[in-house]
Length: 416
Ligand code: AMP
Image 1 (cartoon, rainbow, N blue to C red):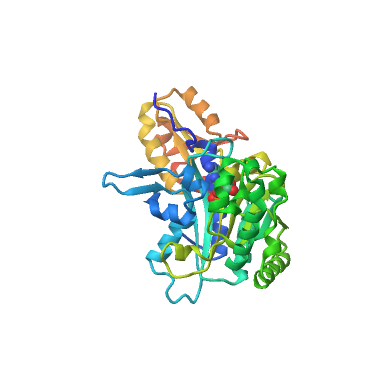
Image 2 (tube, helix red, strand yellow; image 1 turned 90 degrees about the horizontal axis):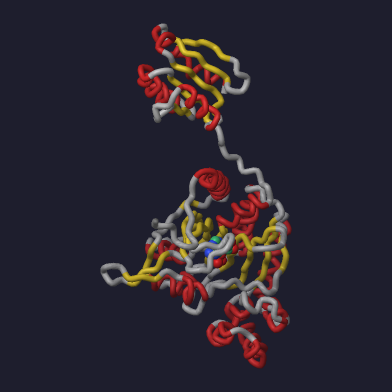
């Protein structure tokens, strides 16, 4: 038997319905913030993700699905959304003459070779959005506001934004030097990856999952102490805007985010002050890194699968339809044609209709009525049909009525 791959899963039944609901809510709030939908290809040149995400990141070093196609091209399955969206932005020269920012949202499958566990898969969905062209701190506030309110609209009221600033490149460089100075004497007490990170990207030591509880990390210098005047005042402005918008946030000075491209604002959304449901930040250097002109950008990515898990764990009511409107039963094969065309007629008039496709006995058809949780049932029999009549029964009250066949749609319109 061929089974599904580790870290992948099938989407069907109630989960598919829950996802459709979450998609609707998210798409509708993105529309309100005037973000347009984008979908980028599942595979792109390896160079895009390797350079965009950063060669020294765990994601590129350990997690990307890299392969060669039959034309010997180096390709990578999309591990995150931002790099592909930036490639689209550059390729379509959307940077020219920007009088308004370019704002897009996506809902895409991602691929990372990770150790699968609850809420962590190798194929997973991220919903996210990006805003290009504005360096005003108002755009950071807008992105945080969209992320925050999306979770709240989904019924996750107890979300908090964990917020930090890495400052501009000058502040980041000063901080980087301080970190190297601080970690050097302790480096042998940290994991192998951190020893490597000290050379490649010392900020990422703060993100280490292995050494997360190590006092050396806990006592490390904090980014906010090394912000220059401009970066500090920018961060103060952002906090003012979030206060104004009543957004629940907390400063988390250890938050640096795993990717190379962030500057100034970095944030994560956490639920009940535990695990992260998503994260984002400002990435002013990324468009340039991917060969476009210097363009500011800010974005966010939601762990969609984890968000749905969190909704289930927190008993959020996810409205899914578990009933059908009408089941058409027939007594004998001679009524099949009527059942067939009537089912189509009902469906085209907006009703969820079902009939028997398995040549079941009438008794078994009645069992299907209950399995499908039908609101109404209609029994077709030749005697009634000769007079153009049918019997409609309310499956809850068990009341039934004989009506003209041509009035069925009107009847259900009035009763459902
Ligand atoms: P990142 O792109 O790593 O910043 O992740 C953003 C969000 O995506 C995280 O907060 C997680 O909720 C989610 N996420 C990241 N990796 C995975 C994964 N392997 N499986 C499921 N969700 C993930």
